[in-house]
Image 1 (cartoon, helix red, strand yellow):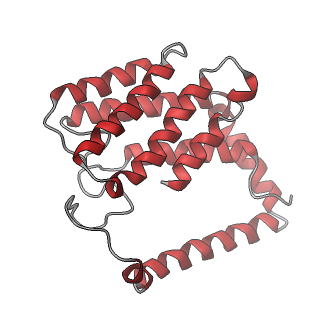
Image 2: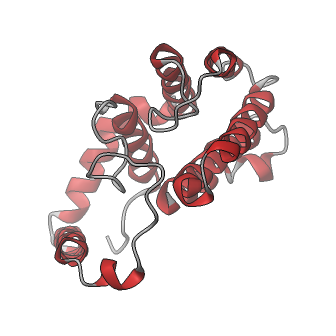
Length: 210
């Protein structure tokens, strides 16, 4: 079968990636971008420093190698069998994918509430206690399609508030992911089938850019 992945496998994989990002330990390194202690005041490295960093090219080489290996397996005689097996295994999750994604997003905001004193992620500290309660409210708003747009508005509002204390460079990843999640919540709650069909596309783009 000459395709990268079936729609079901792609959707389930996206949901599992989001779950993994929530379940991953948060105290150490919450982002791929930071494998060193998080220093808000540190300026971004120059493009030249990045291009001469051996780990940058090692990462790209590994991603390319795994992509080519996956593509080779997919195009082999066993590829279609593997994809069909993946679809059978993930069928229960695929049938409730929207519920699963909403639960994962809500669980993330409950976890952020439990951490306390942060905007959207443990990296972005704030002394304002009401921010934590707002994030708990966002988690509660996610479970009704009538209130999901309000949850989306809350996510964008918190990002804009964090922008007061942190520069754009440190918030770029959260912009893409935050907008992607917010767009998903709005589109998933839409009564317009054409708009609703793009909900996972919006979420996928947000995750990919971040």
